[in-house]
Image (cartoon, rainbow, N blue to C red; front, side, top):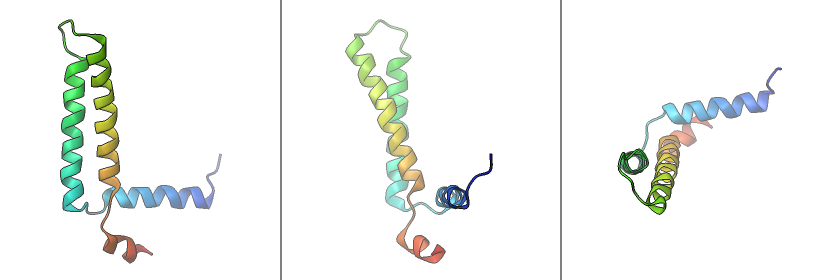
Length: 85
């Protein structure tokens, strides 16, 4: 199945955004997201018996940290956006 031109341009723009330079604030935010996801993973994979509510919170930490990391990675500075247009 052949992709439409519009869909292909959209995918190319996402690739360019992820490869562009990330602003310093978003680099810090990306690191915080990775730390939160790591803590959540540690809680979920813990070998000791912990309450189900704590495991649920760990799962939400993984989700939140992953989303924070992905959004921060796709952020580019305003100058980079203007150059491509």
